[in-house]
Amino acid sequence: MAAKTLNLADIYQAKKRISPIVRTTPLMKSDALSVPSEGDVYLKLEFLQDPGAFKVRGAANKILSLPPSEKERGVITFSTGNHGLCVCWVAQKAGVKAIVCVSERVAKLSPRRVEAMRFLGAEVVIGGDSQDKAGERACELASSKGLTMIHPFDDPHVIAGQGTIGLEILEDLPDVANVLVPLSGGGLVSGIALAMKTANPGIRVIGVSIENAPVMYESVKAGHPVEVEEVDSLAESLLGGIGRDNQYTLRMVKDYVDDIVLVSENDIKNALAFTLKTHHWLLEGAGVAGIAALLNKKTKVEGPTAVVLSGANCEAESVLKIVNPECGDRESEHY
Image 1 (tube, rainbow, N blue to C red):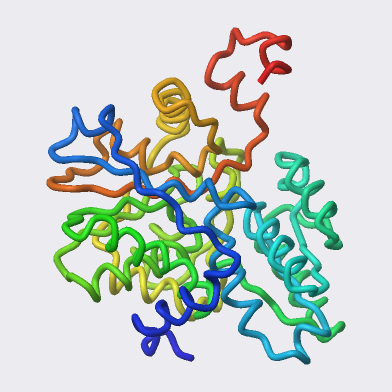
Image 2: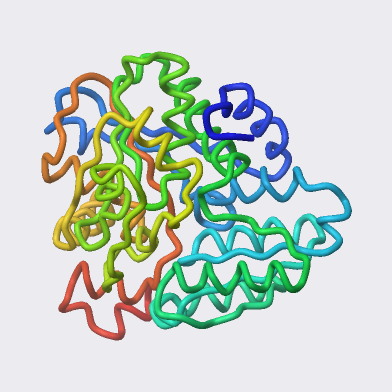
């Protein structure tokens, strides 16, 4: 399936396929964000998925679509954390063997996610200093072991699975005018944007990336995939490249996404604090990217606005200390 042939029917098919195991998440109005904005702001609570992140949608659509022979051989993926965890969760549900390749950076920054992958029965292969290196290792193993690759974002089934979020937003908020979506490899924003633009081309879709790793932003400007050096970030799930041979998401972001805005580490920090203190949710840095963009007026929105809160798989003590540096060990342990 080429990128240009991916359409709304694929997203509806994904919705039907994944509905037995994937939760329909709430869309909740945020008065605290609506007051300073020019319109009501609604939060799409994707962190309420059982594995704690939206990635379960794409992983489920891909794995559940595989023929029995591929399921029997097993699947492999590479991940900065959430995708790998969700692949493991779906694979366990489907009785499929899974291998996840992660970089040394991910293993260091997100040890609990790695532990969770192993707890779900997956084999975790650690190596390389970046997402791209982990991806290269995964491709090698896929070829040598005959495993099916579950790509984190550049796959039509994964994109369609993430696009089911767009369908749910449209069902709950038919007059939505803007949607803010965390953006890294582009699978999430591509699927949501396809659903939104098919329903109403006037809906503005805004991708939110981090200044420390604006890979898709730079790739769109250049007109081809570019590489950006990975550095530490509070939003580690937004790190990683888009792949030198990107087939789907770069084209779809260029075709369907109206704007890409960048937020700083301080913006993410403030958004984490705002979300915890205002809504009492302890989210990961990538999960609050859209809130960071609104709080810091990185984009102008008018009318009803939906913000996707993508995940909550964080190192809780670390986030609490970031939000409140004076938080002692006793408070961290209490949380």
